[in-house]
Length: 107
Length: 311
Image 1 (cartoon, rainbow over the protein chains, first blue to last red):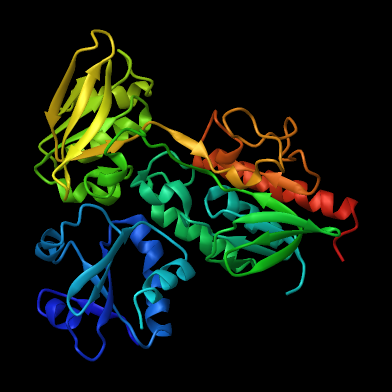
Image 2 (tube, each protein chain N blue to C red):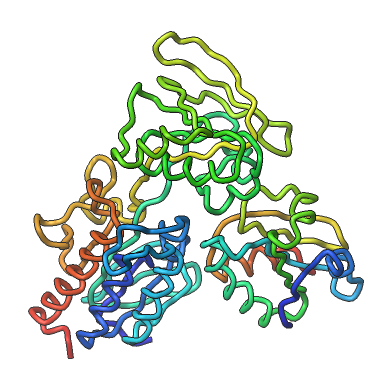
């Protein structure tokens, strides 16, 4: 699936999508070097996975969402299931590590 | 998969420069990006002292240029972490969590990673107020009070960056003087938002379960302890070489740096070369790492031809 660009308008709807309950969210900003390295990795994971939604949230543009989820470091990844946070981790990692972390929460 | 002439571990200035030189020498190569793709420059902002960029260049941008240049000369860049190394007949084998790669020679450019304080609370509040990257995380502390631990150039760089938008930066220095260069000391001391706390060590990081709220400090001269309310703590106390997986395979010095034959990049194992911060505790610059990456590729090329391993 294609990566979803998240915003204040669609955030809650996407993370509670009843058809695809698991969503990976990448909290990032354009000035963050490690986030830039993770960008293409997250995008390639989105394209590969069909049973998970992958979204990106620019914390610069939507700081109210970053605040709501207590983001104090980026890149931070959160995995939501039916709108609830079920996993959270930060930093750079290879694509297989990210994929395995997401797959743990499927099925 | 066919045997590569050279396998390069690491994606900082040393690794990419080795890849550029290996590629131009006609050597086939794979480069493994590792856990921190792009290396330490990815967590910096403006690099002012890299020759060729008179107006400075952003660290992450510089690394993207390195990467493009390495790709241009044919290196296969793998987004994987090498977890172990062994030898099969005349080849080296590098293992990742899923794959194995064979090469006639290896260049280690795994660099160094930030040191942590290893005090109670640090692990819990890491990414929740405790950070080793002001350029990544500083943004979340606009108008807040933060601390920086350390007395070198890196600590002052973090403090000066944070001072642009936080309310106050307190620098906790273990000694009563700074190790940092004169120009950085002057900049920091002139900045009205920066204050210094000398002879001070952090004992504990305390929070509310969600995020850091204060730290406990000790004055190492008087042994007097106190707590200080803080919103963020940035740790800049130096780096340790990423050489764990080579323990028992290569000679390391007591600090864990890989030992090389003087003036070369040859490690204690024939066919394995090393470059950059994983061998260098003295200079630790992007430009010196790049220089060593170049040396490693040239050393590897010569060794391969002496072994008649280039077919």
